[in-house]
Image (cartoon, rainbow, N blue to C red):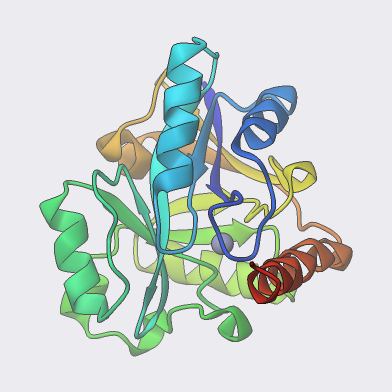
Length: 224
Ligand SMILES: [Zn+2]
């Protein structure tokens, strides 16, 4: 069995101050065997994390991911080889396929945070999204996760989950336990047997990301 938090952010995201090393330490402390770093529109933090984990032979698999902003909402991509540029959903999906990566609709019913309206997608487009994030620890309402779960089950999408941590203390709040595998790949991420675990983080965690955005804006203003 391998336990994985599939949605985390680092200082390479505009709304997080989490250092890569602290995210890795938090993941191991909470018993994760794998973690996907999914910074907004970039993979620098994920690559750095993967390099650190490999160099130090950490008992933690780092999946290079990205939370890509598309015109239809946020898409999580996993096993990304090169940064995927934000843009039209169809273009982003084509790039995911080209890189042999897999993707998941991030917090689909959280419209305030740019969830993709899965119900409104054409079947051909929906068919290219292999998974749905059915437990995101940062959604505003529990019902948004419940609806995502309902949609995923009805449409036979793989179930995924993640903390959406913007601070190390949130890492591992939501996770997936994968059975019958000791490491994850693009195929097992979609097809291995799994159980979703964890719960929503308290609303106060949003302070971390707001504070991070503010601090980064101020830092820019006062740059020499
Ligand atoms: Zn996120």
